[in-house]
Length: 172
Image 1: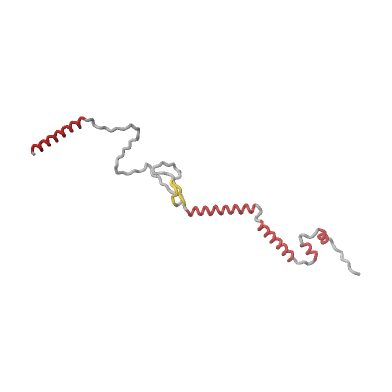
Image 2: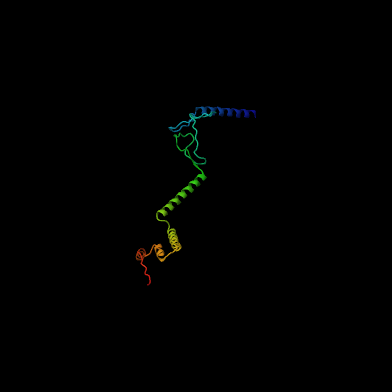
C-alpha cells in the first residue's frame, strides 16, 4: 500500500510540473479596445469651501412665491437680468380688479359718447316734459294774455295780438 501511495504522489507531482511549464509557455492574454477621443475626468475627493469672487446681494421688489426660476446654479448673469418670476395671488387679484374697473369705465365712456342709453334718454325727456308741464300749471294766470304768453308753443298770431294795444269801447 505504501508503494501505491508513493506512486500516486509521484504522478501527481509530475502532472503539477507539466502544467506549470505549459502554463508559463502560453502567451499572456491582453484585452484591448478601439481608441476614442474623450475627455478624461479626474476627480479627487477632498474637503473644502467654495466662495465666489464677488458677492452680490439680490432682492425682489415685492414679496411672493417664486413661480419660476430662470437661472441655474453657477450660471453667469448680467446686471438687471430677470432671475425668477414671483407670483402673489393678492396682487394678481388687485390687478384683475383694476383692469375690470378700467374696462367698465371705457364701456361707460363709449355709451356716453354715443348719446347715452335710449332708456335713460327717454326717462330724461319724460322728466323734462313733466317739469315743463308742472311749471306752466304753477304759473298764476292773472289774465288770459299772461297764460298765453307763458305757453312756449303759442301760435304767432295770438302772440301778436297780445303785444298790440287794445281799445276798449264804453257803452253809451
